[in-house]
Image 1: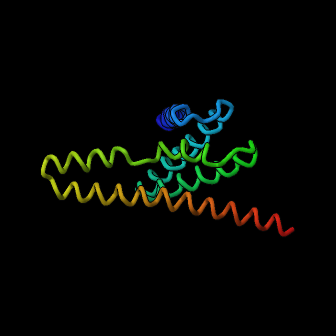
Image 2: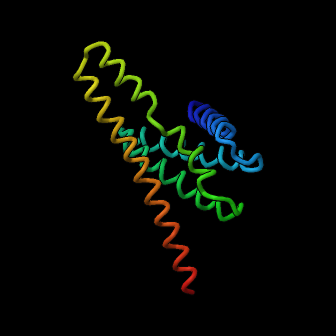
Length: 145
């Protein structure tokens, strides 16, 4: 039951950010699907592999690939789907707990949370870059044929 709740909440939050980012109304559902699928992949892999960083990597790749696919299907820019879809993966809680630990003078916890948050943010960027590169390489292969 928990995974269904996670899926619904990530879908709704992605749509909320799509509205905030002024995405076209006809693309809100698609952006929500990209965000909820990315979060679901993150949730499953993070729990199976016991690593938020690896889970975030697979979630970011999922959002990136879905964003590129939806861009081609809907003839819109991929950023419409990727920018909103990646929001559920952004390590906001990690940043909060890092700052809280600094305020409480717990510098060991701050360093641990800060490093983990940094790696999660880098992993998001790497996942999107890989999915974008993969999409462009497929496009080049199709153009050669």
